[in-house]
Image 1 (cartoon, rainbow, N blue to C red):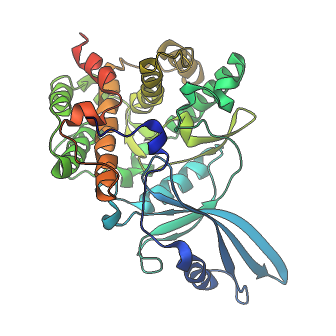
Image 2 (cartoon, rainbow, N blue to C red):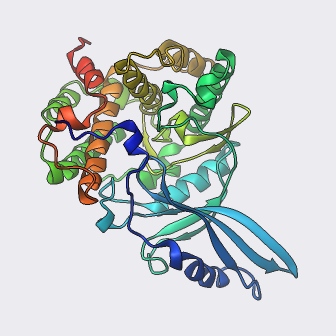
Length: 380
């Protein structure tokens, strides 16, 4: 019997045992040292622990204080590093990197990136590092149930509106890729202690460590073992030796808040990195293909006209003048990351008593298994 959760169950996964009751008092004390004298701040928690991408903990807050005799109010989002006891998705978290990547990207572009306010990197205040950024209202294409299943604002929108949103999101990626001198500006994202001589080679080394980390809990996946060998054997040396740009890392329409089908806030920067342009573009397309694969298994049409490779390439070329290389390797790279993340979320479910350990990782955990297998079997 499969232990894989239904998509509805994924929406109710327990992410943390953290108690939010102490957050307002502790945050208010911390903010009193950062705000002007006499501010007398107070904080309320508007929504409990949530998760974007089932990774960093997210808490919605409202702050109140007095400045120059005038009452101030601001709505914030707090991103917190998960505790080891809560089975984090990633082996390492660098909230300081995420904070700085957002700050620099906002400074160097005109993109709607939420304003970052304060970073607490030590964990001394709340038990985990965190940062505060401004909250932005709007709509996000849902992950659960995936927007491809219908009954949501994005699915129900006219095709031209969906295409407008798609092109605007590709524009976000193109703008990020156009930031000059990315290797120096965002050098902190590229740890160079690996033997690989290119950023893409280091990303592959990081992926191997990420997979090994997940396998320590659950055991190894024959499918991912095969895929890692394939990625190494077919490494795109020419693309790797080409231009390196700043990559958003988790470029998905589900990581953008939209207002009137235009990006109002670009979110989730914890996977930001350096590498070829193809990393972001392949991830953008592949993330939709995973959701399209799921809806196909349910014998539903989904949204086959959304994020088609030819359309994405054409828009990106129009915006940047750059012709992207072959994306097959980058799709498979993306597929492995998705697989490892599924493994880590399964470890979390096991920890919280929501499922038994799988007897067949590939069959029970990987929603995108047929898609991954097809990529491995295709000739390139």
